[in-house]
Image (cartoon, rainbow over all chains, first blue to last red):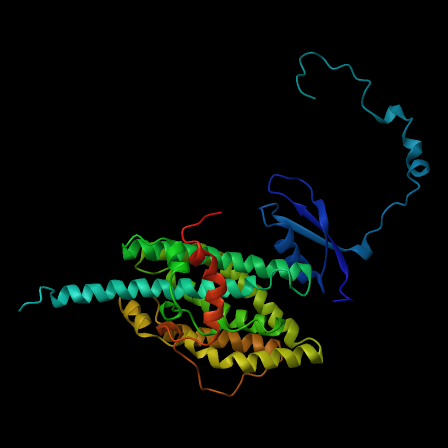
Length: 92
Length: 264
């Protein structure tokens, strides 16, 4: 079991629109990973769809979040906040 | 004639008796196997398989509860599922000898599970047509769980059989050692025979070829050899058990027998 890779598990619930990360597990291959995910993470009807991805295949942004994401902080023109909504429009 | 019991009512009595015993056959299989799987709790080779084993154990326990409750109602003596599970002695249990066999190691546990699951799957499928509607309903619910059990155990047989040299050797050993308990699965007891006649239970002789075909197919994929030994143990269905059942019941029933009627 030492050489079983680690997999990240994402589950979409019945009402959900997207898969959410719920945890990780070890498995020898994709089929076993899905079954393990089913046994471990859907005991209480949490989901109808399972994605498993080998952790090694997930690429994440690095810690230097400030510098990497900073250019977006002061560009208010990217947000739809300059419209005057007519009263007749109830829900937006 | 001084005896006021007519032959007709004697026949009815024996049918109800058989019906009750038949439900115990099914319920005891589930209960004892569930107990064996529960012994893995906290001792699984990896976390995920520990959970898988105990999930299966809980599924089986749920099936035992439904079957015992139905049996108690049929018997009509006011026995609850707990009375039936905890207050019977070995010779009153009607489970297969296969399910009492010890866990030994992962290979034995998987082999035992696989042999039982193939039978359980086909048996429950056939029970969907049972004249006992309550039993047919139990079968419908249980079949969903057992379909997954069969998938799980089949895949593990293949993984271990067609795995490393060591896993193959251990899997073959387990198969060879447990083979002599597989005959009982599809060998009708007197109860099985009477129930099949009453269309409450399936004809086990029709399930036998289905069992053999599935086992052969999985063995081929797993590169395992079917043992040549044809001699089979029997007796479990009639209350004659191996030395293991006594210990199992001692552990399982101890608490209820020491403090009868106690609840959490």
